Image 1 (tube, one colour):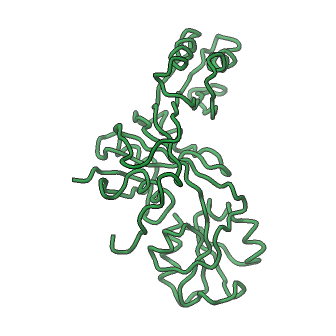
Image 2 (image 1 turned 90 degrees about the vertical axis):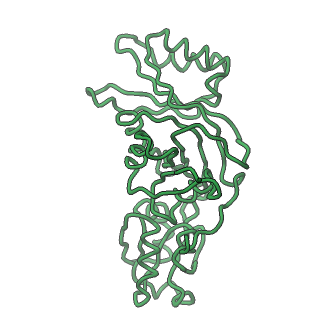
Length: 297
């Protein structure tokens, strides 16, 4: 019996690729959900053993919806991280594969995908109308279903394979180092084939309101133990103006001696510390591209 995995759907998106890379289809059954809250709630309620959602993009920044739901609405454990390269492709119906770009009249994709390719679109398809849809996979589906239209879709190769599109241009994103960080949540697990490239702990820290210099003390506690912090980000507590939670990603496991002492120090200063997870980190190139997505699955 394959273990259930929920992910931000639909099939043929970068999140789908991340879910299949982290949880191979030989051992796991993947189920798309309509939204990030749907994924997190399903895992929190025990309906799924695992869930996969995006948490940060190198160009667009943090996915605030993911962060806020982790803080305010669910109590789930972060269990892994996957750094996935985002390679956007310009794709069309096979009947139009040999058309010059000047013949196309409309671009379809998710708003974030369009934003990542804005400069390229201005140069390659100046003046072409843009239609936003719910996902890159939905864009590919619509282009495939309307061969009578001079349309192109932007999205991953997997969405093109899923709907039988042809790639006109590959790597059309404006910035070459375009990566998205995905996280899995739920039950502890171990990847069956890939080796982790590192280890990370995510903490949610609430500063005491009556302690001047508390954030400096927090950061110094980790620096004194030579614990590198790869991310520090504030999010509003939603209780009153000017109060924040701080997400901190430390590049060590929670049981590392330096981490144990640093967290103890932070709590000693009167800060509240919520341990969101201590987990292995993977990169897409080390795991390898999963099997192609096709309409038969």
